[in-house]
Length: 174
Image 1 (spheres, one colour):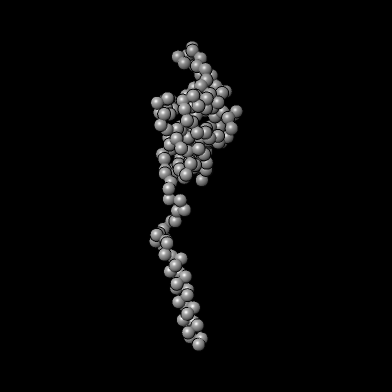
Image 2 (cartoon, rainbow, N blue to C red):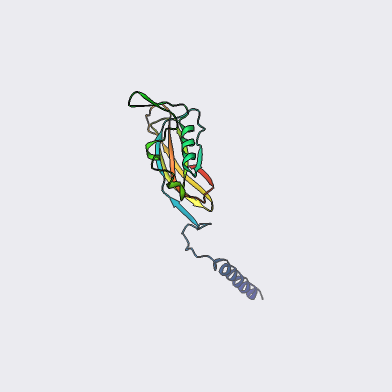
């Protein structure tokens, strides 16, 4: 009788294991992704001036050209720019890399911008990836610091060209 009970117990374990693994499409050793409906986007890193008034690691979704100008106005609120040594350019000063985004661009796309402050202008920001899951964009980056660096604070702007349906940004250092 004990032998039959042990055999039935083994059969039950095998059935449970078979049923639980039946829906698994990944092989053992592969990473399992919970939501496979994600899209990745390239990330540009633009060097910008450090602004003491700008909140650290501020991110925004820019959906039109006026919003881009306002973001740049806030980003450069403590600056005055001189062109040709005489003319003062009032804010918003739009960094050269962002000048390609005009009203035509914003008809079909948006921008995700993330201001990242650095403890030294010698620090380097590496944009690892930007990934969209549902309506949220997660931007992953790391900062590397040299052994000997400058003491002047710095900042970079992470720029991601995104679809119009994204409504949230998460910026992750790591």
